[in-house]
Length: 218
Picture 1 (cartoon, rainbow, N blue to C red):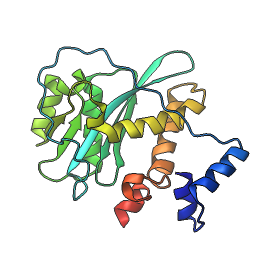
Picture 2 (cartoon, rainbow, N blue to C red):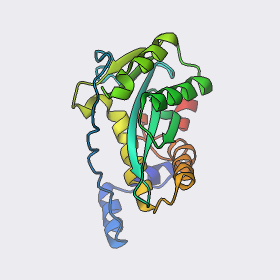
Picture 3 (cartoon, rainbow, N blue to C red):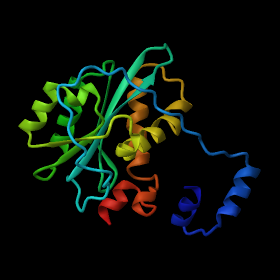
């Protein structure tokens, strides 16, 4: 990623040169931790994997991915973020954080995405088989809005790799470097990362080194 950023700025360095200077400056890459499993409830319905790891739609608004992640505040309390990503340009179309991890949070996040964007007819929403996405309420909401649900195979994070990638960068590359004081602090950190850095600055290998908004405008 460092080499790609130099290239975007008009400077050409080999990987060996970048590694050499990073070593001299004591700069190290961040190692990402595995996401722990959530406690699973009994699903109302599980959907087949329509997406089947095809992460390259022809247009925005055709295929979205959704997932949850947990974030611990400095006082030990847990917060949960639900985010939705558009696979075409890997942009985040909605994000919402709460003190609960339920189908309500999933629905509220999806509603935010629908309010702010205009997906195509027959939108595919891919997720894992978590009870939040397999609940009767969430399935009914998707049906009402003409959304086709697709789900990863149980225990297969590769089926939703773009979301795993995003949350890994958000947490290990940003949030874990702060002592998160409260909900306001957390929300400010997430907003700053997504809407200032991730969407507009961070180069993405799947987009040929472009940031999501650069890819959308290209």
